[in-house]
Length: 448
Image 1 (cartoon, rainbow, N blue to C red):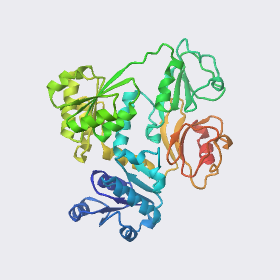
Image 2 (cartoon, rainbow, N blue to C red):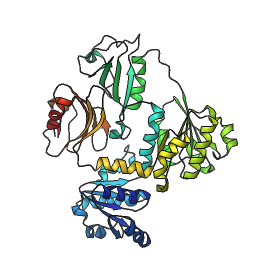
Image 3 (tube, one colour):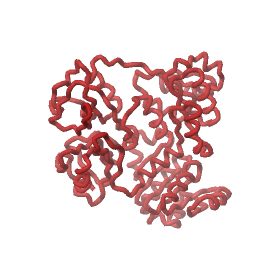
C-alpha cells in the first residue's frame, strides 16, 4: 500500500516506522530540514522536506496514486486542509489527526463530510477509551476498538427475580441500541436468536451503547446495586477531557487536580458536575489531603511523563485501588510493560502507540479480522464490506445470512451503532458478526 504521511512528530514518525515495517511504501513529509536529515538515517521511508498543506507539493509526491494519506501534524487546521486537498487531488483514503473537539462536533456541521475526509482521529480520545474500559465495566470482551468507544460489550447474569426468566428474546422489549449476542449456560454457549429462552443464572453477552447497557442492568438483576466510583484525574489534558466525557454517568464522582489556575477555572465552568482542584499531585501532602487512599481510580494524564510516573507511584503507595498511566514520549514506549509490572499500574497507554495500532487496523488489506473467540469455538469477526459486495444497497433484513450467525454492530463512515433491520449496507462499512466456525465462509461470501 502506498502511504503518504504529513508531519514527523512523535505520532507521525512512529507511524512511518510501524507502517514501513509492515511492508507499506511510505513517504513522510516534514517542514524542518534538520529533522528530515535525522529521519533519513532513522526511517525506512522516502523523506521529503516540504509543506503538506501545499497542493503543488502533494502533486509532486504523487498524492493521486496513494492508497492512504495521513495528516499527523500537531496543528488541526493544517491536517484538515492537507486531507481536503489530498482528497481533491485523488487520494483514495484520507485520515486527519485532530485535537480540538470543535471538529468532531456535528451538531451544526459535519466537518469530516464537509471537507471530504474519510476519518478524523484523535490520539487522546483513543487513549481515553483505553483508560475508560476498566473504569466503566471490567471484564468485557475486547471489541471496543471497532466502534471507537461507541459500542461496548458487557456480560450480565440473569439473577433470581428477573422478569426476563422464561421469556423468548423476541418477546423481550430491549432498547434498539442493544443486541444480545451470546447466552452462556453452564458449560454451553450459544449464539442468541429470536427463539432463545433466558433462564436463571444464564450469562448473556450484550452489545450496545455504554450508557444504555448500564441502564439495563436492573432488568437482569433487580437487586444489583449501583456503586459509585471515585475517579481522580491528575492533569486537565485533552485525554482527561475525553475521559470526563466517557465517564459522564452520575455514578462516577470525578475530581481533577490541575496546576494551572486559569485552566482550572475553564474546566469548572465547562464541567460543573465535577470537582476541580488547583494543585500539584506530585505533592504527597496534597494527595493525602485529597484522600487518594479512598479513590477507586487514579489516572495520571498530564503531558509530563515523569510527573505521571511519580504520581502513580505515590497513589499506589497511598492506597488507591486502581492506578492508570498516560505516557507521551516515545522514549518510554518500550518500558510500558515494565512500568505496569514493577509499579503496580493497571493500565498504561501511549498516544503514539495507540494511534499506530488504530491505523494498522484501519489500513489493513484484510477483509475479515478476528476480534475474539468464545469458549464454544464461535468467533467475533469484523468484516469490511468491499465495493464489489452483493450486500451493498441492501437492508439488513434482506441479506440472507446463515443460521448460527448474528450481526451485532455496524460502522458507517461517521457513526457506529447496533444494526436495525432497516439499516442499509454501504461500500466501506464494517460490521461485527458472531458466527460459528463452520458458517464463517458462508458469512464472508454474503458480506465481502
